[in-house]
Image 1 (cartoon, rainbow, N blue to C red):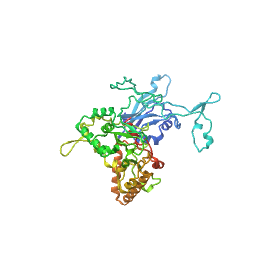
Image 2 (spheres, rainbow, N blue to C red; image 1 turned 180 degrees about the vertical axis):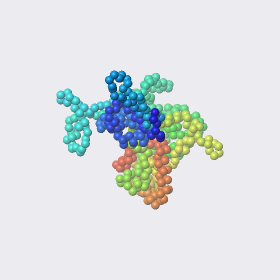
Image 3 (tube, rainbow, N blue to C red; image 1 turned 45 degrees about the horizontal axis):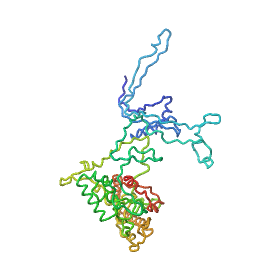
Length: 503
């Protein structure tokens, strides 16, 4: 056996097909450039298309494995056949040569997805290709789209998994005593395996006649079940005092003020307050028995939906105040990418374990709670500071700027009617507040241009770090210029994520 030193390294592709032409195989694997891109990114899977150039062909994916194999070349010469010589003697001895080491192997272990050809039946029951009618290679007029063609609509994927798995039939779910099976409507036949765990919050719309005077018994029972430590009882007393001092709170503000973990605060809130769905106090928690529609001083607790406006209209401002959105429509996994499993969440009863504690300088054990994880900037606006996120929900009393408070209290003493759009404020106050906040942020942008670059970049790093670390429960919405003027008027779905926790 011949061995060359040093040995080169190779990449092996175990092709699930009969090799007839090397050029065709390279084309099916995406060409040289495609192979280099896949091999350069360990998180990508190798695609094999059995019909290259066909946009309706579903590829089969190969997974990447590390290997320690040798690439051998085995030769056996064939001698010329002579008369009178046996047939077994026409082959010579085998010679092998080690060409290199295979360090990476791509294996196609999954099932090939369903393949569907773009064909139709012709007049004489003959098969006719539809690709010329489906593929658009140039600019076409309206006549092209108004033609009568056979229906050919395919989903992007026919199956969720490309690897065969064993299906294990699960036994019937054992529910707790007193569980009632939810009613199934004709439009809700397919639903989740178990019913959502309700937290028994009370929802109130702006047009409802009254407000609840006491919480639901199930909410009190749920809180009693998890109220097992003295710290939680003290937190309940403090939260009751917060609602006495201020009858309307946002959940972000309560997370910053309360020592409870957000998962336990979610169970305590329905005991002390109800949730407003619409109106100027939408997405806020109101103390049980308090009706803000009857008291003009409750306008200080109204909510303001503020958003940094797009660079299309405020280009110079957005280029300096580059606060990115928390979520993106591009944050999804492609079938050709490898996704890592997410960590399992802890249960409510595990929130006081040692993994949620830290030791102070005095040697005491301190519980890491919701108050330790949130800052005042999550719900308070201070003049001269940047908002931590591009979309913020502020209560009017948390706008710490004299010019903004002047707009809020400009109609003090003349509040006559509480409207669903503006509450106890004068008409158009919300838009005036947004415009004034943009003026204040423009002043901040002017200072940032004159400030040293290092300090500004460090501040942006802090903002982006808060974007990644804070588990914000408010739903980020699309930033559109039209919505900036109308989004705060009567929307019932501003904080869908928070609302779903209590359904």
